[in-house]
Length: 259
Length: 307
Image (cartoon, rainbow over all chains, first blue to last red; front, side, top):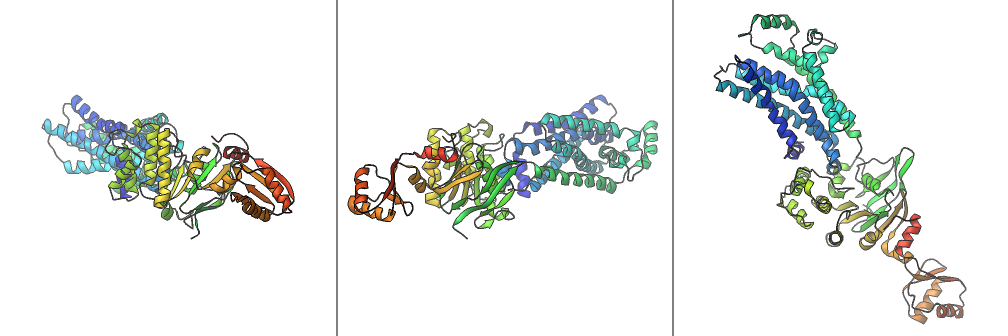
């Protein structure tokens, strides 16, 4: 399996899509830093974890994963791999692992950019260890959050354009839901809002926001929202459970695709 | 293990109502080149895909190295090198980088294997040219390099000369022949080009509309198809003795008890008939058979399509 993962990394050599995608991690923190005068580290990190994650990383990871899955068919390399033999299940898992590494690396890059910006403007670096852990966790959770959409993309097995459209539609819908009370102010349980990936991540992440420099509006929102916070083990259980289910279905679909 | 490296039993692949391959029984002998000859769409590629486990047969079984392929892919496939349809590689990588990926997956630790296999097909090792910039001939060579890189016992090559120029075709042909003669590889090769199969194969299978029409050695097929005089007599064995004693002629083949083929057309047919009659043989038929190998294949497959 390790060999397969290493080979998946070799395959992305000279792939401009991956390089350009990675560069987008700098956009949000820099933009936020430029427009907000009294930015603190917590604000900068929340931009990386939420805006960058929800709006940029999710569609990117879906498109990149789709590109990894479709390239074997597009370039007729699947037959060579199957003759090694490499099973489609292991191949799928290796590709998904590459995307997971990309997602975490992407979030980490955003973290270090924010850290650099904070250093340059003498913003006090408090709680960096906790922010680092949150950023890594966010990368993993956002990877899991992209799985339902990736499943749809693989099931459709259409061109990149369709994949991009599906990815952006999913991203926009998820983003809208995460600011909708109907999706985030529902108690945990066997209900649809509990299963919505991005709103659940938001419900988990928001509890770690610092209220030190927060105004009365933010404080009031935090307090009214706190009953709906999701504990860390629960958010991981929900999202990883959903991801596992999606991956299992994805593998079944991938195994049935003809050469 | 039997003498057959590949043996199929009623191999059938059905897509809807259409049988792409129908009850195919092929027998590939160890250390031989088996040419699967057929028109485009005859079922050659589907057959090869089934032999490699890329497509599951609807009915039938594939035996490779004496074992059933189904359930034994992990132990059988590493001993096979293959080229199916068009070459497939990653366009953003060089030829060597592409091979390095497959070498890693195959667990080939010897780095010289990649270099050696590229040299074998006359492709440069230290080349910055990406696969996407390769010509069709270079792509085909790279696919052959991939097929032989891990030194497999069996090679399954689907139309390996596609896209090659005449010199490249001759080189690949010589290379395949050498693999079989010098290194004892067993090779299954498919083509719709009769001359290629005739130049390369030891054994030939003719496939048409998914059905294996003939399976014989090249010499047997040549005997069937070449120019010869065919005699139908009361005793073919006696006729053979007459040819040997009276005409010192040994270029003949006794087909059955009554049928004999003479492959020397320089001898006078009238003199031979006279000799047969003198020796008391009854002759019911004597004619010159002038069918070429190409015409023979056309007749067997029922028309055009084989170059």
